[in-house]
Length: 479
Ligand code: UDP
Image (tube, rainbow, N blue to C red; front, side, top):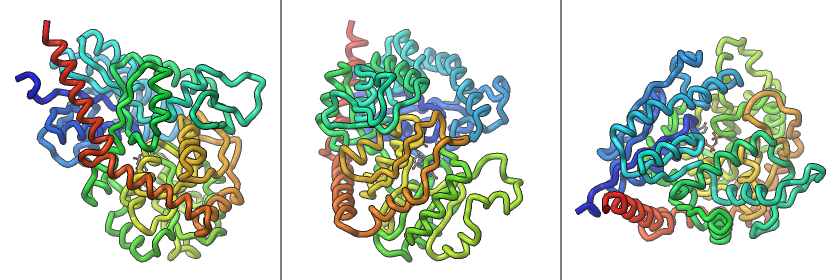
């Protein structure tokens, strides 16, 4: 019986932690329903996946050559999340465009029933068409953000307009403080154009957070179907799994948890800007001053800049006010490198999250019921911020209005310590506004957990998508 045969699905994640982590989690959802999934990726990334994802008989990784030598990269740098300068960023990107041939060879020789490809690999569309295989797209965005992008496509911001810029036609009156840089907008629009040719879009969110009104807006304006299957982070059950997401943490889950255990409920602010953002020292300095002035307890993740390991200790610390760590040794913890983010967010002591609004971080915070202080930096983060602050009321804005093209390098504008401190106090002072925001976030957290359980919206969407894939397979085999 063709109907009963497990599906064979290939997943092709883009090479950056923020794409790889949810893409593999989505693949695991299909494996958990008895279907055979294979992740197609490069050697260093397959090592990370094997170290962070527990063995499952239906979950495989197929490795293709990464052209380090061809583009002039040292061995092992195979992800945008492993570089901190423009030259290497471009080289990794260039290398990703060269994965097409080896992946096409493999897929052509072992064709699956379906391919799920990241939208940063637009050539997956040609490949799927050539082999007459259904293709579903994944871009790691929430659907609200795609609606905002569609709105700007239909109603571009006039060149002579000044902020705030209204996003016309959306179900809510949403305005942007700043417009997307033209180059980013053009690249995104072009990739989304190709994504819309796929059989459907997989979204790492739950329908209740995007909202029925945005699902309808998307389907009406694009004619494309979106499948909400998330939040995929809720798939992780054990402490070990949560601690190892994406990379090995620089400190043990035990150490982190026992420090948080010693703190009161909702008393700690967690500060982390994802896997691609490296603020300049003067911005880190402002954060340190604000945190100290607010009196909040904190866990602050500051990624290590590659190539700076040999700097003098003094030089390394110039982003911290003198004596900061000694004064705050009980109040705060600075994690230099990769942190066990999902574990931290789930701890009851964590009362707010200062976030760059990367979609994974955002949906992880919502899943844990933690309200956000939104500080978008680049990419689509400025749209995500609007869903959190204006549309769902589950966070407050810090006031960032410099839409960068990448997450590192010098920035023209600093977010000042007064603005940061004000936002921290708004969520951490226990006042009426903070209580309301916290209450709404906790409600969405509950809805997220219900969505992924049997009978929940995401659970049912996965069942329906699997049925759709089986139907497409049947159409292909029936003459
Ligand atoms: N992350 C983590 N530890 C860190 C930094 C990031 O576990 O120290 C994870 C985080 O939980 C999320 C992902 O990395 O799953 C970052 O994705 P996001 O979309 O938030 O931001 P990006 O890195 O793509 O900008």
